[in-house]
Image 1 (cartoon, rainbow, N blue to C red):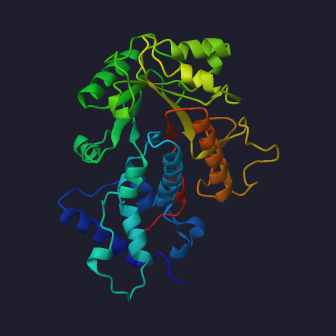
Image 2: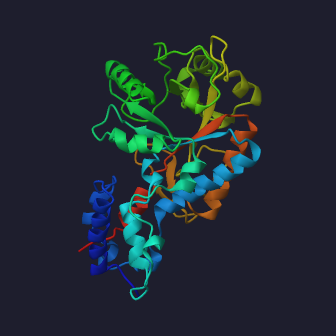
Image 3: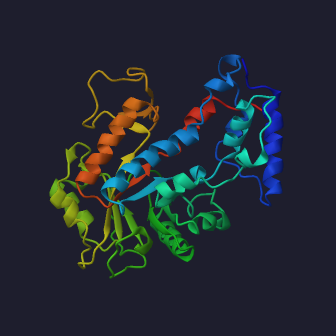
Length: 362
């Protein structure tokens, strides 16, 4: 049976050579240290036939959601977070595809998917991506890389956790200079439980019909700390943000009404804005309506671990048909409520599974 062997190391070299031949630096993803250094599971070799392309599985589920949305509302917006690694054919994908090819098969050059090729079907399926800490973090993406995809119609956004309000304001100013729309707060993680008292950066009195029109965005998914349902609703409604991202359920388990969603579509000054729903594509939560009492890690099999920081939150095999059915029904419900789009969170969940099946070049 074909396994991960020395051939993978040769293919890594070939991938780097091809990147240089294309006139660009090798594109290294967040998990390169895992690919190059993490040992094989059980000290054995994993057959290539059993190593999926986890990135493409993530693309496929988002493409399926986009196809469905297009049949109901072609203007429904889909933003992937973080999403940027899915925009192109990655180094790992190139190595895996070439290593799986039969050794004696002669393949024309124009059939081989080159490293860095834009994934056009996925790009067509989304309206934007939301980077993590582009301005408050230490791993900022190079602007030319992002501008390449902006030119293809992908709106660039970011979610900034800056640790202080002054740093958040500075991040918003940098974002504006880079022609990006950002949510910035003083937290250190995805809390999203406060609406800033400051006015939106680049406040806009015009109607906002598409992501391209938006100049600022607010993410406010946690309703519990604000008190009553009415208090939470008022805090989200009483501002002039061009786009707001909220949970489709108050307190995680009480669905909003169509009237509530519709009311949020207007800024405090009266102009139209976008209301997006938060959709975690890679985690199940035991407070959600779909959760069954006997579920736990390993039962059903596609629930594979606990989130280290969020109690009651579980990692899933996002490509499993049962989970895809859960996501599909959730997505349908979001559209039924009249949301303008979704922010699909957790699109980098493939890193977990790639770390467990590294392509060892040695």
